[in-house]
Length: 381
Image (tube, rainbow, N blue to C red; front, side):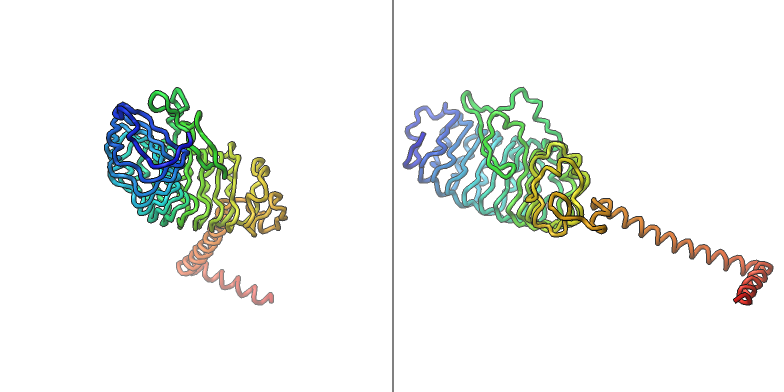
């Protein structure tokens, strides 16, 4: 369908029986009509890729059976209306590619059935509300290309679906709504946009790229074993790459580029058997790139922009200092061992000296022998 003109619902007869309305990829303009509330049976509303403007009407709350809402790639503005929280049946919410502003709503947590949340390419600001971390069915979260700031919540590790991929027990990997509508989404994974339809229910992704996040990468992210794609690129993240990332056994794509990460690439990357896309470029990583078979398959661009990295992948020979400890964990372990050795030696000397003094002060005979021994040595010299 390739229609143009203002958005009208008057042409729909018996709107109360309408289950799915897909007007995506047209040239519709004007505002979203407020009489959507009359479509009481509507489960799917897809008006993506048009030229709609204005705000999302508050009357959307009347769509009590709505499961899928696509309003992406339009020219909508303003805040996300709080009335949307009354659409308790929502499983897919895609508001990407607009000019929506304000903070990511805390009431998102009231949409307990939400599986896919896409808010990328808007003007959202502030921190990620911790309430998002308790959406137990969430399998796809895309907040990329906004103005979000603060630290990445530690509680993201509470997303149970991303931890266990419990949804894979479903008989079908399609997402069907109504009698005829099959869900299809275009998602940015592995640096490219892909269309997912027949395997959509098995796709898991977390994309927080192109924001203003600061601080360290939460260690708990490493426990999201069901995650297939993780993108934290183009932020201001510091610290080390967590060793726990090696626990993400199903990870296929990892992008940490354009941050301020330092230290060595963890040896635990050896456990990422399915990793097919890796981008660690433009950070402050150092040391030898681990000698792992699948890391040798990536192009030099995956590691570029890290002047202190060395190894065959970047055509940079490692000197003794760089190659002596190939993992950050080993470096920390060696430093800890050396510090422990120095402390132990110091304590040994103190205890030994105290023991000698104790013996000398308590025994006149030993004290006399000690003095004679010292005199003999002095006479020798």
